[in-house]
Length: 172
Image (tube, rainbow, N blue to C red; front, side, top):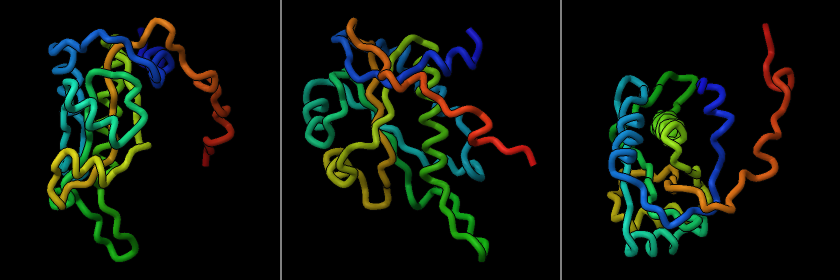
């Protein structure tokens, strides 16, 4: 399978089976995340691996978007470790971007391993931070349920709807 085929195959899974994610596959997904680039190689990211009934109940308390997955990755970053472009015309910290790159690599590695996933931003950020016991200097970015799609799970109908390239690409 080519990389483009992998990208097109992957979709946001919104209904998971009870099959548990194997540790070997989880380790590969985390290794792909670790290989991500970051601004000035600061690597400000944090990943919290949540598994087990107690953690799933806690996550269900901060989001309705776990969809029955048995593993959830919580992605955050340390505001003390992120790189900040402090040029006069722009003050732009890198933490959220760095984590997004890392999460993208994790989600694509999962797809290559036939592990389904969903990028979740619909959750109570402060509530999640509290449930996880994160320090004040850490900022939540996303939750990522991982597992195997239930038999009747399908991509959303809009999954294949894409703007044509000329609607967002300009050759200058």
